[in-house]
Image (cartoon, rainbow, N blue to C red; front, side):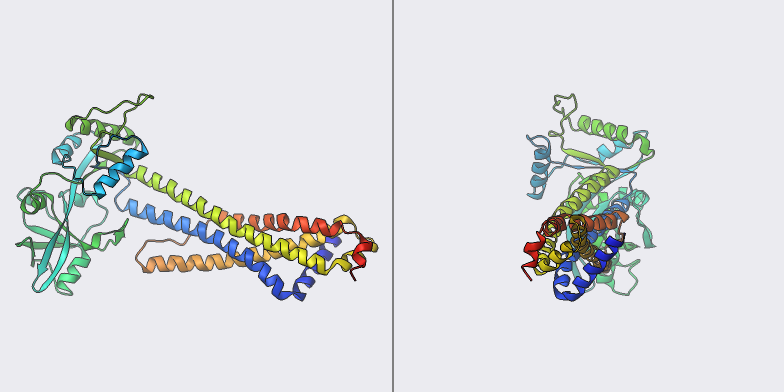
Length: 428
């Protein structure tokens, strides 16, 4: 114990005598450790953001949406389908008849269909390119957000192709400002539509700003404006999540039957989805996939951070070599008066470890500070970003500090401990 205390005292004295050199050495570890904290915090923030956004749709729902059939299989099929949709390929086979069949399933409570269009919208002298979100009347019973003022349209209004709309708060402010919009009429596609409600503020979800939407009865948008009878997606509310997988399989079977699709069989006996013109995805499954992706990104960033820690460790090793060359005569003197190989090793390893621990603690503080700034900026931008720094990030940061302190201090310390005392004293 006295040897360790003496080594600590010598190390601190040496660090104080060379403040600039010590500071530069510590800086390398500070950058690496603060990056560890920031990466873990950002990973938790992204995860909380994804969870809150998926939960805004509800985790007890299954989505059925259009997909372009492909000749490829596996991941290549998904990539080709996505590319085709982006390129403008239209799938018109998904419709409300599919929804009616799916609603007959015992574990499906209710469903709604949806489609999106853009049209010129105006009120008085104010005009804008409006995003029309056509949904079934049951949308209000499944969606997590609610109408703040007025009411949502009814099933009777939808079936009668009523010319009514519910405005997102951003659209309302752009068209009406502070004036009351309920009971007023806006012009869409050269026809007047009565404003019956104002949706509550929701913000952006996965890059989609629902506050800038104009909610309109699905059949009104289909028949009066677009002249179509298909939809982009269907959302189904599930009664019992314990039967989620079975219900998903039942929906897939109904869709294949309705669309006359005979899937290819894989070698393991399961069916390939390459011929499907639809995709069925439980929201809770999407949440799990996104969580896996987030975890993978966090690990990738940590691998990059490890490189900066290695660079910082190499800096420590170089500085330790400089210290040894400057204190060669001191090492020789200590060995001539009885200092052992172990004593010299402890002395220089202690100095290396102290430098990394100081860098680790400062790095943690700076990492927390920057993580707080990131969370504050994300919330200012309108994202539901929660500041969360998991305990494992502190453990990893401190373990990394000790590990690199020992790893990169070991060789220089060993070299110092093996110096011949006579040769060392000649450097006086």
